[in-house]
Amino acid sequence: MKRMLIVMVALLAMVAFVSGAIAQPKPAEPMKPAPAPAAPAAEKPKADKPKEAKAMKFGGTVAAFEAGKMIKVKGAKDKEMAFDLTADTKMKGEVKEGAKVTVMYKKEMDKMVATSISVTPPPKKAAPKKEEKKM
Image (cartoon, rainbow, N blue to C red):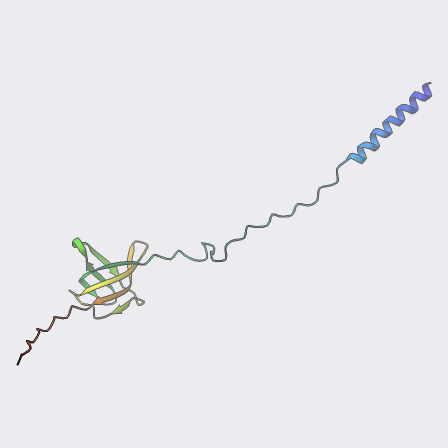
């Protein structure tokens, strides 16, 4: 009987060890890195391309003008704005004090930089109408 008890304990121990080895989980597969979300094709990283300034418009009468340097324009309600000129500033017409102009500009840092200046030609005076003679 003692012998039978020893054999039974040995068998149970062996079954316990074998079942533990069989039930052990497989080693985990190496994790694959998650795919990066696809960026839209039109959007580029901000570090590569600086944000472009929005073009704005201001119109009025030239109060002061220094060719290649700056222009001051007095607009509606006596609002006066000064713009820096660059080599890229496009000029359409003859800019001089008193001329009516439209300035396209962009804000760079704390300065207003003119991208183009268009002079509005003065309105033509209508020629007096000639009276037709009736015969």
